[in-house]
Image: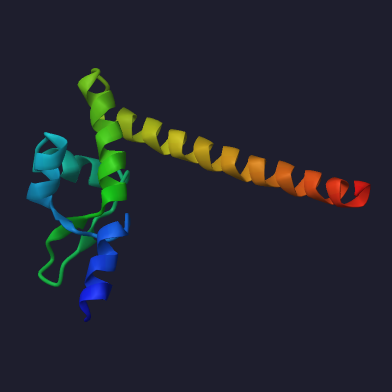
Length: 112
């Protein structure tokens, strides 16, 4: 692997670069919390060849949001469900905006 290819991973939000211990440190939580949100299917860490969990920056952002809710007194399972619903809502809004753009574009082309 070339140095350029290795450095390219630094910008990849989905690259599983963080061990469980490092991820827990970054989030200020415990490995048990990461296992709990994995069991609740909020995130599914990739596994190294040795079977160790590896987390991406994207997964850590999701875990951080769940942690915020848990810190506010929400049970882990409920926090995970809320984060999943927030993500689904964001995706639906993105699709809706794309649809509205697609509907407007043909009208703009015929008006020109």
